[in-house]
Image 1: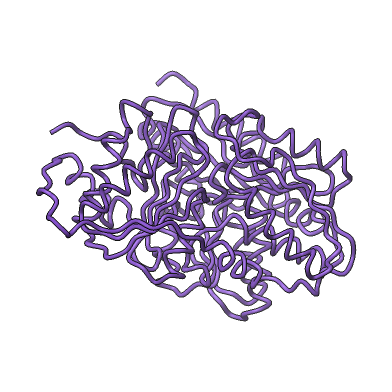
Image 2: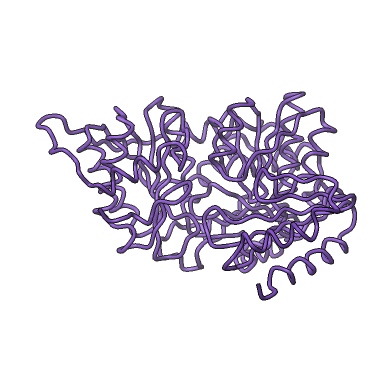
Length: 459
């Protein structure tokens, strides 16, 4: 029984050919069908050149397990989340490698209600069955059906329900960079809704056409080198905001009117405040990497901040437990109760655009005070061999001086004027460091330098 290395902590991702191919996709479909016994499931795929063939192999496996398959075609991950809860069916699978290199693909799996199927909630069982590859012969007349459908209109209706187009009374220019990924077709539909409402909002589209060859590079705006095209377009068009997506658009990244990239951390505070205006006293979920700004914003707005372990499966579970209205991670994943507690890359920018319209302020105006009050390093990644030993060394050096220690995710140490979180990646061989302070950006840089030297020192 050969091990399938494409099964990760939260999803499936692997190198094409060796780790993920049509045979393995078929086995994953059979295994999902045998483990969950869904009557009906929805499938979709991103723009990658292999997504269609992998999706059809997956669908064949599902059908051979007796499951009816609905195929929504080329789609982003959140369209699968939406279709699963909107249609009230038993599950969904998106074929996507998101921001991974060209020679990769993968899958994101959910069950009824768009609940994630991850390491602790069934992914290991699916892996075990797929590895064993010991499936019963397909019974005559028991094979599931296959049908192509569209949920596009219903999905865009849902997105537009988060904002009021009547609030857009003054001209606004938005640069939207789809990175040649799956977002373009949704942007076109949203643009139509703005036009129908006579809202004076111009959409300036960059790398708009879906193209699995990714002629402008793999879209991952979390990497500084992937931000230039959006920044340049904001500057050239004197736009009010820039929006850039990753390949399957479950994350969006925002740029202010000066073409400056805004850390996802400050957008969490902005959206938390917006939701608390609509629902006083609500709970807001946040991750442990950077927390002070979010806690401050939520508390002042009369909400209840709740910390959860990093990662979509943990955040979604905690949101359900707490019935939180909104959850945000500094990595630009934003989760919404009315979106079945799932993450969306479309809802955040719509909400921020509405905030700009309602408040009559610039994006830099909305976040600059918060950035000054709680400056941060952003997430710094280090490729290391012995992450746990390094974390131990840093903890030994600093823990005795800390006023608070937390181990929700890695180690968080808080001091009077600064705090840090250091943790291993759930998905890559990386050590991740975040540092923030109260009003002292110089202190952030100093501590970043000191701790970076400790991480890079020979062990």
